[in-house]
Picture 1 (cartoon, rainbow, N blue to C red):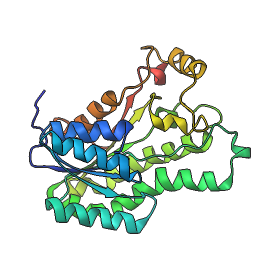
Picture 2 (tube, rainbow, N blue to C red):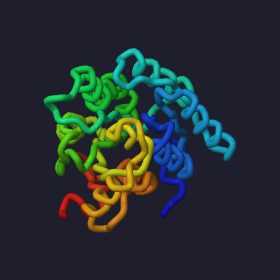
Picture 3 (cartoon, rainbow, N blue to C red):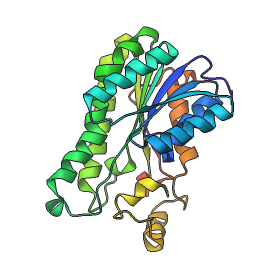
Picture 4 (cartoon, one colour):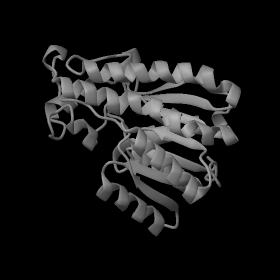
Length: 256
């Protein structure tokens, strides 16, 4: 594998203060790129940037609520100011409500999960497309295997990720004439801080972990490095003829 697939290229990675996003951001830099770490977690995002810079990489942090148009506008402007353009946009930031039947889900949680997971993709295109068009860029969206194999009690979350898949395929068709590719990844569950959302702020309980693993043919959860590898492949020239692809990173859960 080439370690310079992204030499001279700039990527925005949302939700990059931890979990999948952090792994994606670090891998971009390891492969020669510059990265804009975007997250609502200023302390975590700043730490990721500090560590990247300490290792000789180029990165900046921009505090961003991906559900807000003004934040997206500022994020793209700061990216252009710092690095002169944008080549890859990774919509990775996400939110999940607690495990709750849809009929019992508070309306504010329903609104938040759609704003964070789905409206954010729309806003990323509204504000980022002009820069991506300049060089024929790439958008990669983090969806979920739950979009095609939904579990009970996270119906609203699963629905947002189903919408992300449809947006990915629709945008791929819309933007092909601009030489902008649009793909997505569908991870299965991972033991990251993100999983605290469905479990009410707690780490993944042992029984829940066992149940999840038993439903995955390769018998383990997703690692952030698995998702980073898939995202970078889809964003790279190795995938130059792939657009509208929604790649399952799920250890076989989608076929189990």
